[in-house]
Image (cartoon, rainbow, N blue to C red):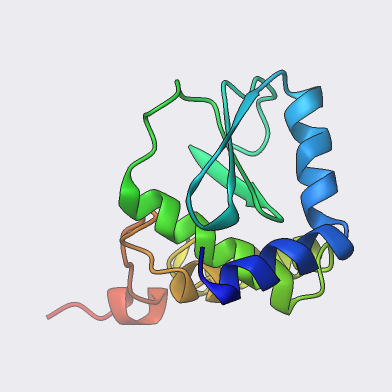
Length: 141
């Protein structure tokens, strides 16, 4: 594991985002396993919120799918979100992410396309599509 990943793992424990993610694993009845780069992968999450196929809290990647269903690119995408938790000092990332979703919906009607966190985590790796702002779509030839 690279030094950055060790630092991220430690800081996300200290800022309480990873312990909160582990609480969600427990509450959601998921099975956890060690993942790459200090991530913890949790499969079989049963709580219906959020609606994403996979989401990250601290260094914990939660998914409703069966073990082995996460692709390499999606794990890379979620690992970038884990780094964002580190940079945002942990749980403040959650309300910041909600604001970013609202901005993206206002700009293009999609919760991810103009969400700064999703764009920095690489939209395509997260299986999101890029949508142009609504004001560009209003112009017709």
